[in-house]
Length: 239
Length: 300
Image (cartoon, rainbow over all chains, first blue to last red):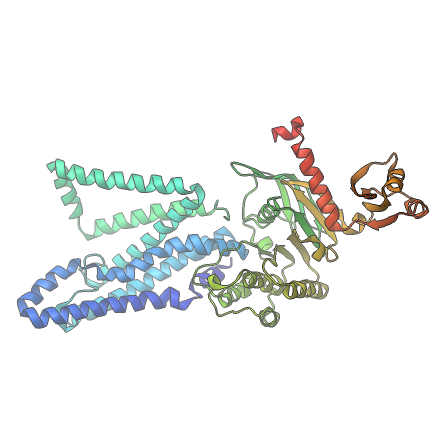
C-alpha cells in the first residue's frame, strides 16, 4: 500500500492545506477582537456582558470551518483523478484520504481547543469576546470541544467526499435529486413546526437532548457518509 | 514475453461503444504505436489497461495480471494522459514530487535535466501553464518514472517542433538504455513512424490492423506514371486506391513478386507506402464501408 504517497498528494501544498485556513482564521479572530474592543470602550460593562452571552452563537469560527468543508469536495473532485493518473489504486486513495481527513480534523480540533482554553482563561482575550468558545465547537468542557470539533470536521469531509463521488457516478441528475430531497425535508420540517404545536415541541425536545446524544447523531451521520463514499469510490472511474 | 494481451475487450458508454471486441497482443520491451483518428478509442483502451475505467466485457492481462486495483501491476505502469487533470493549487514541482514517490524506478537527476531541457516552469501554478508546458509535465514524468510499462497518450500536444523532436530523441535514447514496453498513441503518424516497432490501428472502437511495422513495409506499394501505363499495370489486380491527375495516375496495390521489373519496363515509378498513407487509406476505406448500409454495420 502506498498510503504515504496519497497523504503527500493532499499535503504537498502546505500553504493550501494549512496556511490559508489558519491565516483566514486569524484574520477573522482579529475582526472579532476589534469589535470586542469597540463594544467594550463604547458600551461599558453591561454591553460587554450582553456581547459575551450573544457571541456564543457567533459564527466567525466558520472562517476556519468553511474552507475545511470544501476539503471533501476537492479530495474527490481534484485529487482522485490525479491519484488514478499516477497509478495509485482506489483502495490506496481511499485509505490515505480517510487518514488525511482524520489527521486534518484532529489538527484543527486541537487548534480550536487550544484557542478555546486561552479564550476562556483570559476572559475572552480580556475583551469578553467569544470566537472559539461557541455552540458550534462546544461551550462545555475543553475535551468536549476537542471531540465535537474533530467530529464536525471529519463528518463534513466524509459527506463532501460522498456527494462528489455520487456526482461523478450519476452526474447532474444526482445533484438535483439530492438538493431537492434536502429542500423538501427542510421546508417540510419548518412548515410542520409552524403548523403543528406537538411537532414543534418534539423538535425542541430533540434539539435539547444533550451533548452525548448529539455527538452520537453526528458520528452516525459520519458513518453513513463514510460508508457511501467508500462503497462508491471503489467503483469510481476516471472522467 | 507478452506485456499486454486482451481478448474481446469491450467498453460501452450509454450512447456509444468506445471499444468493441478488441483483441491485441503487445510484446514486452518494444515501442508500440496505437494509431487512430480522434474518437477511435485509443484513450479508452489505455484507461482500461491502467484500471482507470472498467471494461463492459472481455479479458485483459497486463504484466501478467489484471490491472484493476492491482498494486503490483499499477506501480510498474505509468500512463501519461493527454487530458490529465491536476488540482487547481498545484505547481508542476508538486506533481513531480509525488510522482517521484509513487514510481519505484524514478530517476530524479534525469527528471531535473528534463525539466531544464523542456523549459518547464516548475514553480508556476499548473492552471497557468500553456498546452505545451502541460505536455512537458507528462513527458518528464513518463520518461523519468522508467516504468516497465509506459503509456503515452498524445504526449506532445502543443509542443513546438524543436521540443517534439527532442521528445522523440529522448524517448529513443532512454529506451535504448533502459529497455521497457512503451505504448504511444498518436495521430501524427509520420513523425513517429520510424520509432514504432509494432502498430495497432483502431477505428470506431475496433482493431483495423495489428502488425509489426517491418511487415507493413511490404503491405502496399504505390505505382505512378502515365495513366494508360498504370491501368495496364493494374489489369486484373485488386486496387486499394487509384487517383488520376490529367494524364498521370497513381494507384496503391498489394505487391507481388516481379512488380519491380514489370514497372521498370512499363516506365512506371514504384514507391513504398508510408505508414501514414496506409493509415489514411485503411481508415477511409473503413469509413466508406461503414457508410455502406450493410446489415452488420447498420445494427452497430
